[in-house]
Each structure stands twice: as structure tokens, then as C-alpha cells.
Length: 364
Image (spheres, rainbow, N blue to C red):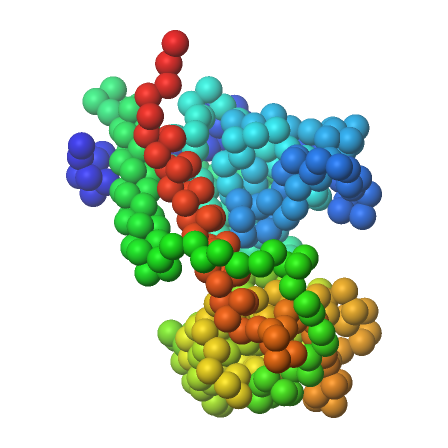
């Protein structure tokens, strides 16, 4: 197959009267506070988020009463300039547009999404020049063409398939390597059978407050900047000139922030730390798996803090969390490690089984 560089390219209207794709407003657009929960939450709720394919959560089919959109399309987030392929029926939040077209399927969509994102980021931005429906309809884009000077759909499909195949092979190799490192599942008690008790976090950790307060002075670089976000492990970006570099192998606890107060994340690498975050360094030897377990327990504070109540230094020193204990009435770090390892092993095996199932021929 020809490389992208060797292909002939031509400018096309993306939407509009002569476009090869069609864009309309979503059929649902329901605010999150109106969403209904049910016994089985299986419907993707798509928003303008740039993470997790735009899926913010899964909700009940009862929400179809607000309207829905069918799968096999691309969702575009206005203002945020996001674009994702949606394979299943879904409902959306506000400011989502739906892209369809005869030349659109799961393979070509991945190619088009890259083009759409690049064009939107180059032409639009948050605020007065956002990606409105009218502005989207005037988009133009370069696409590879065949000998007839038309969009080379077969090349687009093959390129997308090959790219996905390479990525899946890399992911499979990573999963297999990770499973070798983790070893076999260890037989342990269930969570419900373990004894638990409240443990002060200052008994287990040394608390260090973040130093990065003036974000305007920070330059782009390669050092992770962890802030009080409620997504993406708290990662805000990568910088060059922090006031202080914080060592990794610790837990970060959000003191306040936009919906993230009380959330905790395990951080494996050195980083810069926002002033709205506290790093918890273990006083005793702890594995990453043990700290992942404790992070999840700490994140239960998310229901308590926020809404005007932040985690000050004094409050942090008084925090206790429920943890499983051993026969000595001390935190059972070994149990926590095995529990997380077992969970990872089971999940990675599920991923591998899924990839293997995809490779099997299916037909009548």
C-alpha cells in the first residue's frame, strides 16, 4: 500500500451541498441533571469531553424518551473541537453534532476524525470562534485521491485497518508482557470477609503540599503536571520549569478543584504538583498495587468534600479511611496488593480474550 506521502491529495468540501459527509444537530441533547438511572445502565451518554470516546457515563434506556442517535456516526463536540466514532446507539449532552454519510463506516471514520480534529483546531477555538453548525458546513479538507481524482475510499479503509492492526498487535504484546510480570492469581479472602477499621492517613503517609500556583509562568515541557482534576489521573499537562519536582511512587489527593475534591490517584513518576493537591509518601514499604488499593479507598472522600468544603492541611492530618486489617489489627498491605494484582490479571485476560475473539472469522 502506498504511504500517505506518496499519495496524491485534493481539497474537498467536507459538509454542505457538495460535501462527502453530512452534519446535523443531535436528536437528544439532555442535561446531565435530568438523566435517569436504572437497574441496568448500558446507554452511552456522550458529551464534549476529549476523553473516553466522549463517553461521560452509562445511563438507563429510560433516557431514550429524551431522544437518541443511532450508532455508526461521528460525534462532534462544539467549542471543544472533539470528534469520536460512535458504534452504538447513544444519547448526548449539549452542543453535540452528528456526522453521517454514505462514505462513512467504522474504518473510514477513523481517518476522517483525524482530519476533522486538525481542521477544527486550526480554524476554531473556545469562545467567540467556536465550531458552530454554520462554520462546520464551510470546512474544507485535503484527502487522498485515486486515478479518477475522487476520494480514494479503498485506500482510506486499508490505511485505517492497517493502523488499527499495528496498534492491536502492540497492545497484545504489552498485555502478554504485563501478565508475565503479574504472575498467577493468588487465592485470598473476599472483601466482605475481611475485617476493616479506620486508619489515620498520617500513620501511613507523609503529607507534602504542591508548589505550583502560578500556571501562567509554566512552559511546555516533559515533566507531568498533576492538578486537582477529576479525570485522567489528575494530569493537567507537561511543563518545563516547575518550582519543585516531586518524586513519584506516591498518592496524590485533591484538596479542592472543579468536581475533584477528595479524589486520589497513584502516581508512578516524578512530577510537578499543583498547590491544590497533596502528595502522600508512604512511611513504610508499599507496592504500587497497595497504593492503588488505598487510592480507591481515599477517593471515597469525594462524596464528602467539595461543594465549599476543601481539604486543608489540618483536615488532611485528621483524615481516617477504612482499610482491611490483618491479625495484628494493622493495615493488611499484603492482602491489598494481592487483591489489586488479581483484579488486574482478570481484566487483562478479558482484554486478551476480546482481541482473540476479534481475530476469529465470523460468518454464516
